[in-house]
Length: 482
Image (cartoon, rainbow, N blue to C red; front, side, top):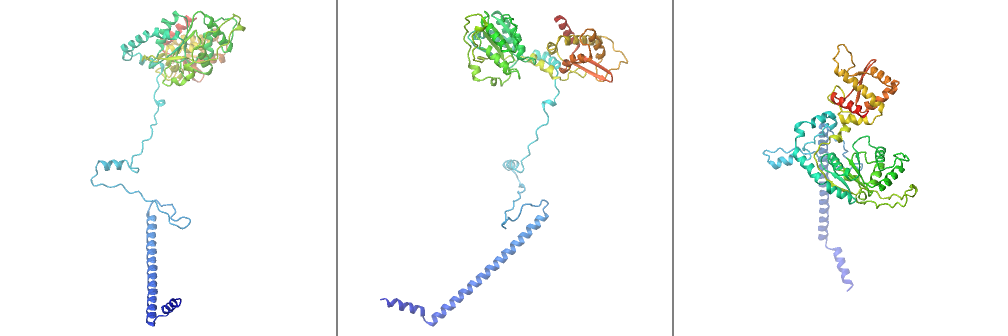
């Protein structure tokens, strides 16, 4: 059985001659066919290479004619071709566009309209009104009489709530008024009709620019129930302790009326500490107002929810045995809506006086009576006397007929007073002995825009930037104050 496959293999290997010839021919034909296919493949590759060369030549010719050459490399570091950026297609030219085609074409990324640049105008480029112009505009009949009945009804509504506010103050809360419009008249009416009949009243104007911790403490220490001896500096911690203990021993409570608590720069660290201490005193009642929408950000939850201190026990009247002041600080406010729609005339008058905005006068600032009196209250007595001399000289020049040939510096009004004449009168009145002291007294008025001056060579003149009627009223007030 083992020999049979050997024989078969030998027969198959050997085979007949005709069969071997057919096999030889067929293998040769196969080789010829393979050669022909290889030659055809090489020809096709050459044709493809020629086509690619032609395409590259076309691309290079197009790049040469293109005004914006493509600076991106055509081949990478390894010699491979990188895809070129395709040019954005030109907008489609519709033969008959409809609404949808126009919408998408207009809002496409390439054809969308560019945003217009922001306006260069701002509020600082607009003309600013002086305090006098604001007063005149607010005094117009169409402004004063506008919604007069509705505002009167609001005032009556608030006055009916005075008894409720007094009850809430007695229950250990403080009141914070908010709403549109000035609440100055409402607070003053409450202080006049209710607070003065029940205790001591201290009114604080936070909108005044010269309000400080020292000024407020000096005003509070001057109240009748605070002993004046021994004297203590208003800015010392001993002054706060004296005020707190004196209020505890007083038979009548203290009502603090605070206008515009949210004035920027008012709630400094010392003032906040003082007000948060007095607001929690069992015999002190705080009634304040806010005008800005971000006023709640001034207080924390602890400030709003802290309650009044318990009354202190005083075993003896000796100062060394006085009990310690409780450490809690806060305001214990109840928010009450008090919309009035009244103008902020009094609150904005000091800011207008300090801003130096140009008014309708002759190249100067015209201030109103309130702003002028406010500036005069913040200067020493010698400066007030010097202002009186300048004001009287200006009134005399206004009453005198205009003289021809009088040469004044440029932009100086006809009622300006010569600086040399004013200096002579100041020396005679022992206000200033030399020019340095004289100019130092005038510096405060010039900084606030109340007094202006002009010079031409050796001649220098001064004038007060108020109207004649305002100046007369100011001089009358100064004479009454002595």
